Amino acid sequence: QKEVEQDPGPLSVPEGAIVSLNCTYSNSAFQYFMWYRQYSRKGPELLMYTYSSGNKEDGRFTAQVDKSSKYISLFIRDSQPSDSATYLCAMSENGGATNKLIFGTGTLLAVQP
Amino acid sequence: ETGVTQSPTHLIKTRGQQVTLRCSSQSGHNTVSWYQQALGQGPQFIFQYYREEENGRGNFPPRFSGLQFPNYSSELNVNALELDDSALYLCASSPYSGEQYFGPGTRLTVT
Image (tube, rainbow over all chains, first blue to last red; front, side, top):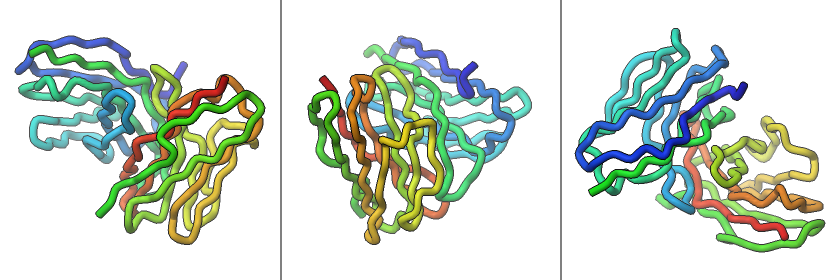
């Protein structure tokens, strides 16, 4: 069993839809949770960085962490064609600069105009 | 403030050869991490350098090695290339607060 599981998709939605992306994990020591967006043939771009359980909102993006269920989510409101990309969840046990990220496999999202 | 840069963008090598990939960290970041991303997979942690010392290593053989320089730029060296080493190699730099910011990657093809 992988430490981090993520549905690879692809997920196709119409423009303006609310998108829900999810990851589950098995390592209860994970405390820091991230979402990255990766366009084709580019490096991952950090979208959200959260610590422990709870919600964090940034514009159209909301990240949720439920440590009791070992489940994290990213919601995208009013989705746009420019949101079409692969979304990667990542986690680490430690914060600070010297942390090792464990990634999911990524979910491919297509937002249709 | 400049972001993380990597060179070259892509290269092709033959099995058994050696390769060096380079990374320039974002200004003010003293930690650099390297990841390997195979097609259709998430990035996998190779190793991390903090103040020029290796600070953690993933499940990669010793033929993967690295360096970090006083200006916090970094190199990833891979010896005795194998076909399975074909991947996107990503460098990420971190400030003290811990967020990792990735460069555009180097796409390595081994034939």
